[in-house]
Length: 104
Image (cartoon, rainbow, N blue to C red):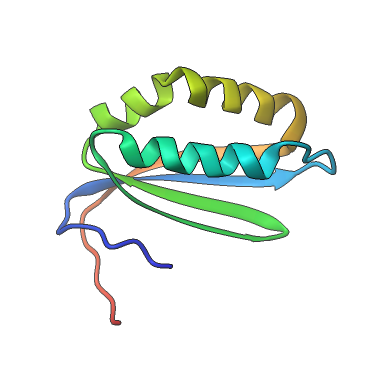
């Protein structure tokens, strides 16, 4: 589903990753992270797809909201487990959205 974001400007955190074969606990943790992110002040939406390469884009009202999410203890535990177990490679990019448009 395409996230319903407000009029720009806002921020996007783009998380690209390649998973390992050891995904024990991954799906439950991913679902928990989405549920927790949705409760964070400044969270605007999320989009995620996996076809070999995984890409998740979360949308935020401000850089402060992004930093607060990064500091969330449950999120930090999930990040650590991701580095140790679930991902063989990943990249995080933070971007300011200046324009958006579309249909549907």
